[in-house]
Amino acid sequence: MGAIFRIFSLYFFAHDDKLGILITFLFIVAVCYGFELFSLITKKGHYEILDAIAGIIGGSIGLGIILLVEYFRFAT
Image 1: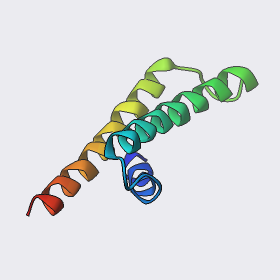
Image 2: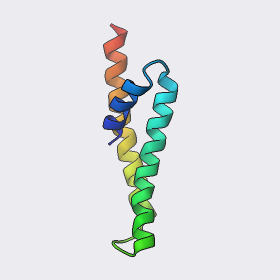
Image 3: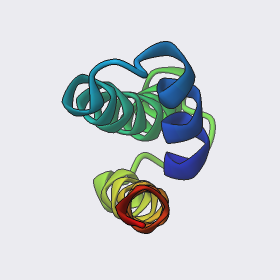
Image 4: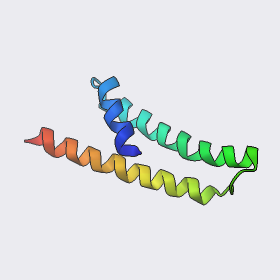
């Protein structure tokens, strides 16, 4: 998820890397916690904050992998 959001942010925020990374991280947090809020409000599924935290960690790892690819691609 973090990788996909970062690729989209590269398209929309190509001029400002820091803003793109921040927006990507905020989208990751919003989507992960949004699913948990949906479970809490509708009583469908289980509301567990640790699921949201795990999703945020996974999305951040995906974001980090894309950032490493960008770094090595533009460093050469």
